[in-house]
Image (cartoon, rainbow over the protein chains, first blue to last red):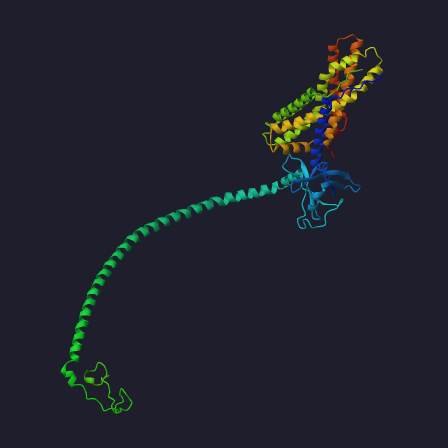
Length: 290
Length: 210
């Protein structure tokens, strides 16, 4: 029997190819989030409890997903070995000082492994190698936190009770004292206000009076100064008259011989032709008496 | 020569796209208001995962409704033949039908993701699509593809068998189709239930366990 060749169904093939392409895109998308297309590095840590740990859990550095938990094994010494797969291009951030902790954002979100970056030697430390071990720090779980909270409840209650008793005993007294202090302060302020009001009126009167007196004094001083000025002028005229009077010129002593008197103006011997000049201001060229 | 079933056409692909988008959008619109829009992206991921879980059943049902009459008629032609002819016909058709059904799964998932992105947009569409794809579980996707193929082969066998039985009992084609749909749904749901209950939960739900 001859078998007829079936015609090619382009629609079927095209749609099948489209489905395959979509599937490839889905796989590519899945792989991108799981570092399938980049080299990865296996690190591990040991812990005494696998509680909260699951294969496939995300591993994050600074909140950024860099890998996942690959497998969890129970060892013969009852320790749990957790193997992490981390993208190789992020391994430079992981150093010997890095710590792995089980972390959870909020109460209902998925827990993940957080690795602290080794910031001391970032980029220049000896990079972790495949199979290296990290230090795992256990984080307190919710049950232990609740237990601690319950344990701290009794002392907290005692402290609150004591504080309440103390407040009950001391607070009324303190309030009374405060009330009295406030009343005293109020009285003091009222008194001060009154004093200031009264004192300011009196002070103003006194200042006004002093100002009036000062004005009178100034007027008197001014008149006195005018009188003194007139008196000085009269005295000056009188002295000028006395100096020019004939009686005073008669009483003037005769001029002493030259070179005898110790009061000579010019100690040098008088030469021929030299004449002693009379001192300025002395009448008749006679030497002035001191 | 037997007619060829299980060819992908725009009708079956369109139905897959529509069903995927509807499941995803319905799921999001059901859950997002209850969660007060605080976890839209999580709801989207959940919608896509649910669509992935439901895809084998939905695609099998679509194939049953589209190809059922033809399969029953093909089975009816073998009413006078020995049972090995039925097996031979099944072997002839199973490869194409299985491949076609598995080819519909990516369309359905793509429609679910696109609908999720458009229903409750959170970030840029491309980044959101990438995020949804990265949150798709590889075991769950493999399980969906495998179950789709398995269910398609079961639907094919049941439809051919019911057609042959109806031919032997001189029943009408519509009665045979009705029985084929009923038996297929019962078998598929039973297998799915057995899968969930009897097999490892991480295979059934696609969730990784310790």
